[in-house]
Length: 166
Image 1 (tube, helix red, strand yellow):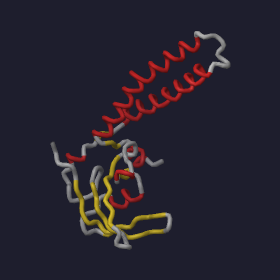
Image 2 (spheres, helix red, strand yellow):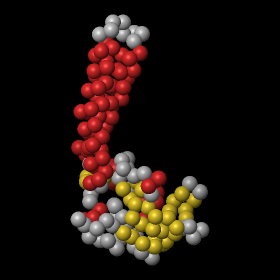
Image 3 (cartoon, helix red, strand yellow):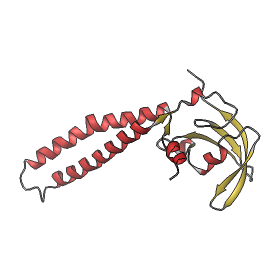
Image 4 (cartoon, helix red, strand yellow):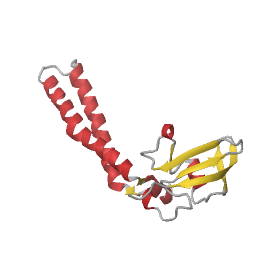
């Protein structure tokens, strides 16, 4: 993986970072202690080899611990970028909401966010997605090439918007 991709993988909006921190707190302070309590209770019941509560609890603890490690590492390496602070609002960068039209005159609107927060159902695409890479640094009126599995297609940038600074 190139160093550029590694750096782009670390970008996250303030909101996205807050969501990850909330999940980290919830897992560490609420869910994990509850599972530890169940595992301790189940272990006190004797034979652990056939104790489903114990076995499931230990498995769930491993899953929680794995997710906690992932979230901790992700947040430690995150580069929080506030789209509202973008000064070059006439070009597409992280956090931009872009409306574009494809060769079939179908219009799309996407917001470019970090890999940990993008959700296509909400119209959000990852910064490293093909559409985001095609749109990066484009201006309104630019025609850019989007590389798709069925081959390259041209898209036209119709509008670029950023959240207003608070």
